[in-house]
Length: 156
Image 1 (spheres, helix red, strand yellow):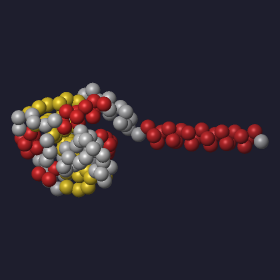
Image 2 (cartoon, helix red, strand yellow):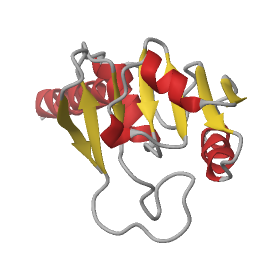
Image 3 (tube, helix red, strand yellow):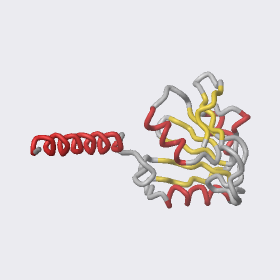
Image 4 (tube, one colour):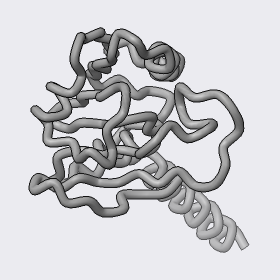
């Protein structure tokens, strides 16, 4: 009987360790997101400040908000397709993030480290980070290859 109890306890311990290790991942999560980010915004934009505060609210102390006269230049520099152009461009490492992209998509990109130029979400969808209102439908985030071609990166 003691042997069965010992095997049972050992099995529980193994399951606990597996679950603990599976949940640890790379250590990146919404609670400890601390990648360096620069959000470049046009001087006339108000939602960009709210987007900036969204990241600050997630505990990111390494985010900078930079007001520029012409955000078209940064979009050209990073090869951002016109379909994705918005009022602000975020640079995270070697990647660009165009528009009101939720942190979950940025986190996925950083964890997976794909060989792409960046990600973006067209428009200013209601309920997306920095935008008022309720979310209506999926947020479709596109990946942008180095040649400028697009693919669906994820839906949130």
